[in-house]
Length: 182
Image (cartoon, rainbow, N blue to C red):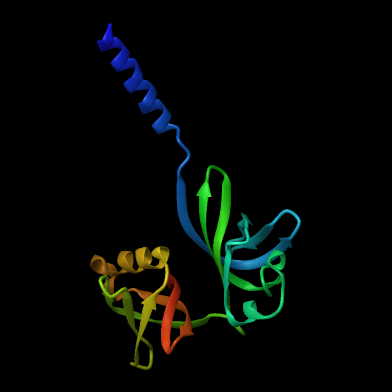
């Protein structure tokens, strides 16, 4: 009898774990279409026309110089419709929650384009060579960016063309988002 009970419990636990909702991290680049402070959502439209609705909380970090100007948390500290952003989020079921929103462009994060020269996983840096031959090294800010840098550094992708979105903090360039260029 205990053999069957163990088997049934094992199957039940397996079934529960198979159907568990998992949080999957991701990042999306696009334009803010709508901010709904009451619902605490922001709609971002990507270049391919897809719209993502992200929930935000008081803990949602906003990066970029404009984001530091006066503005309440409900207004995402300076972001507005039309802002170019990168949203770092987790997806749980069909819900996407923004953990970090990076404002890109004028008053926000800067962009550098080039070819990946090296990725230092232990030092958490990535070095690119720009079109004019200069080398720029960036500290890698988040786990999502670290994962993207690791993906780029593997195999044939080592010389991949990338765009690095970064800020300058304490005299260092800090990469917030890394995008492969076509």
